[in-house]
Image 1 (cartoon, chains in turn red, yellow):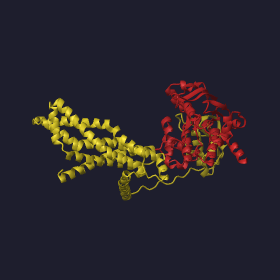
Image 2 (cartoon, rainbow over the protein chains, first blue to last red; image 1 turned 30 degrees about the vertical axis):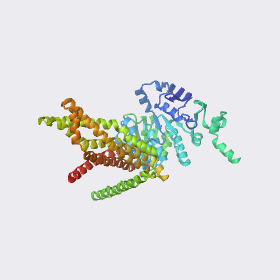
Image 3 (spheres, one colour; image 1 turned 135 degrees about the horizontal axis):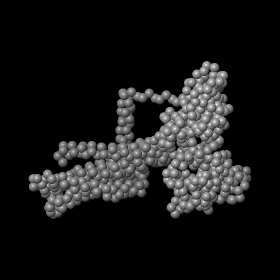
Length: 251
Length: 376
């Protein structure tokens, strides 16, 4: 996936401009930055929910925003998206949430569909909760059902919006491990929006850092590399928060 | 060596006590081939000790392959047949490792209650609801007293906002409905009264019907759909987003903070809307009478004044106060008891409107019987 000179905003409000980066197939790519810098807005432009005011998002040779709506819808089925908090359909059980995309876009018979739903929920460790309603699930469980739903159509690219937000450190680590296993297993490319440093350092191969002050990307690279070698003060302050805290404690 | 029948995605070969499953072509959920079923024939040889796989001819694959491999694994385990995963793709092996080794046993579904049990549960639920409504009504009466001396825990801005929503904002809809009702009454009455040369009694018909019944009932029905449903939906959404819990933990009484301003606003505004609706309804009848029945405006107004007494107006006012209170209480109560999902918000709004309309009609019938008994 290539993002070239992307500008995004709402009406007259410019959120980000001149954002460019490449995402390698099979990598885990992080969109980083402080709160309010436009990470989730950029994600919306990548998944077809917000038309950018300039620039291009290319998947291979295809310019996504140059496609017509029908083509974008078809192409969008190769995306899996995990929204913040899971965004589960609250009137459906966990299993029904996962089953809906399969019912809509495959011709599987009922037993195959049921097996597939069971498998997806098993992959995220929630097979026994398939009959639960979203309101009865914890935040972490809702995230995992959301992930199972995002995986329903075996996407080539998985977009995750703050997947670890609100999870305790153990649950967040488990979620990170799951992402690695799914990436290694399915060869899926993962693009995640996050400002959870342990997740960023733990699983991301590459990334882009968005700045809220200059409204553009100010650094590119793996989070660990940015932490160790970036000279930009904003990036260093963000990435070295843990070290700063440790240094302050020592001082 | 024997070769078993094949299908498009796999073939099996038997080597002594081992069966080799050759996986072929693409295995994706998007194609129309379906997922091959794991049949008993795969395991029907008593000497079978191992199932292995050859994936050298396997193309693209996704979860459909995992489902097949998982099913073979789960079927082989209880038969003490070894599942040799060395021939399957490494990525598939990793994903299989994420799955539970045995299918997770789900709790048996609860026995559905028998008819008597269901009836008993229904009675208990209705009794609890009656208790909750009684508590709500009693609480509102006490808290209204607090509000009158300025001690209620509600924000003045909320009360003013509720007054605006239930008052000025509702004027256009109340006017439209009542003017049409007045005009319809005049039309319907004209057909019959003209036969007897009693055209002028159109004024009596429209005036009495509007002031005594129609303006109060139609205004209340409009308000139940417009405002009662909105109260229920608003409070139910607050339930879903934990806003009610946030109020509770701060010790802010929901009845005073949320319910009281709404009940007071609708109780105060509905009679004003009723008076407005009555006047507009009579205006609708007046327009039809003057323009189509050639009744002079002065005569229509004089006839209306003689037919509609202050008794009738007071009767209508009392009804509209009761209707307003009922709509607000129903909307708030149904919002407070709603669940936490988005569907519950829709259900709450619908229930509030239905309960309010049924309540309005029932209450109107009670008023009619009382008025008849008291000769009002």
